[in-house]
Each structure stands twice: as C-alpha cells, then as structure tokens.
Length: 318
Image (cartoon, rainbow, N blue to C red; front, side, top):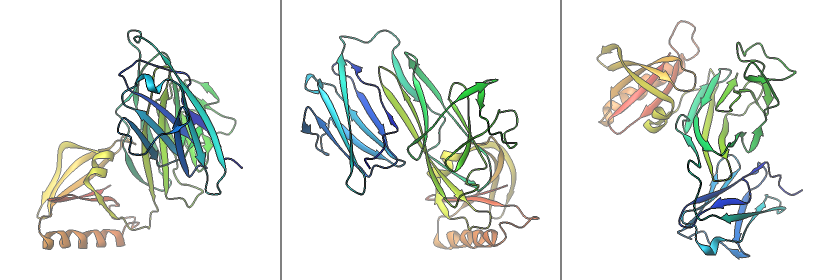
C-alpha cells in the first residue's frame, strides 16, 4: 500500500522572485523522498534548494532564492521500506510583491528536546505571526492531532478524562492523551507514555498559509520512574529549563538554583557543579550513580536529569 500523506502545504504557493519559500509533507509511513522540478531531479547538493528529512515523518524542501526557473511543477515521490510510492505535486504563483503584512512564522516557545517521567503532564506552547489566517497543525510522529469541536475555548470529545482539570476533555491520539487550545498554539499532553512502552515521541508544530510555512520539532523522551537517568548535553538542559536568580543553597559540591521546567511551569532544583578535571567529573558521576539507585525512594529527592558541559555539570532534582 502506498505511504499515506497526512499533511501537505498549500498549493499554489504565492511567491516573489528573490524571496524564499517552503514545501512540507508529512507521512508516518514514508522512508525516503525524492524531489523533482519540472521533471528534473533536484540534486541533494543544490546550494539554493535544501532538502530535509525531519524525525517524525516530516519532509521539507526549502527554496532559498526563488527564480523564474522555479515556476512550474514541483513533484515529490515518497517511498516506504517496501518500495511502494505516493506522489504529490505543488505549484507556485508569481506575484510582483506581497501585500503589506503578509507573513507566516512561529515565534519561539517550543524546546527542541524534552524529557519527562512516564505518566506526568506537559505543555507545549508557541506563538505565531501569520497573515492571511493560517492553518495550524500539531503532528505526533507524522500523524495530525485533530481538533474536533470546542467548548469554553478547549477541545472536547465524547471520551472525558479526569486528569484534565479546567481544560475540557482529553482526546486519545496514538499513545498520548492531548488537549489543544482553540487557537492551536498550546498542546497539553496528559500522562505522557501511559499505556505504551514507547520511550521517544516526535511532536511537530506546523503553520501554513498562502504565503509560507514554518515548523518546529520537539523530541519527547520518556523515563520510567525506576530507570536510570543518562547524562545529556547542556543544550538539552537549556531547551527544557530556565534558571532563576534565586539561590536555594551552596555547598562543597556546588550551588543550587531554582529552575523552571518550560513545558510544565513547575519548579525544580538545578545543582551546578564545577567539573573541569577528570577527577571532578568522576566525583559527579559517582553522585549520579547513588541518586539513580534511590530514584524512586519516597523519602529522597528524585533525580530528573543530568547535563554535562565543558566546565560544569548540572543535576536537576525535585
């Protein structure tokens, strides 16, 4: 069976010479994609046209500088692992200039990486600037999270969920219960990972109108409560947490700051420890091993994450 196409950007796309434009296709079944422009294959090393395969079944074609040679048909051939193919075509409509105020872009807010303990809630929040009115879509691993009807500004569905206080009812989408705000800028994830053994999800926010398209991808990593925390990079800490100026405490092994989880708005403690030499790094790793052994102990602080930088390590706890 040909791979299903679950989302594609609008066609024809309104463009002007010298500006950039983007085509996006989502398919949870596709393994690869090839692009053609007017029946000519677009090479991977074409500097003016970038081809991207984003985790979670999203395929992107960015034309950085539209020329008259681009005016025609863009063809996309998606192929699954069995060799079956699906095809889509896109056209461009050339304008001398864009009307004042036309734009389409997502504005900050979404981290590139999140990690949560299985069963906890999380919120993905972004802002967008778009004119004309855009279509906003959330994808989970290439499949759209649909929005049926609204009551009191939030999604309602026949199946209610008591874990969604003050947010309406939760809609089961794949392995995640979700609630979407009316303008689609917020996605509430309820009890992430419950009912599935999956540990990794890819959630993508896509905005699209006649002028353009923008997207942001979030990798969501699920930890089981008894599972040992692995050491990640400092970039992933910055993606998920914001450090407050409040100092909770200081000691021989480092300074503890108050931090905020961007996806839940909950507070945690971030212990920043100097770790330049191999001896210092080993000492921190021993502490992490001890905390991992007692991660589910009811009377001890739970280790939420460990992050390593060139000169320091950060331990995040409750």
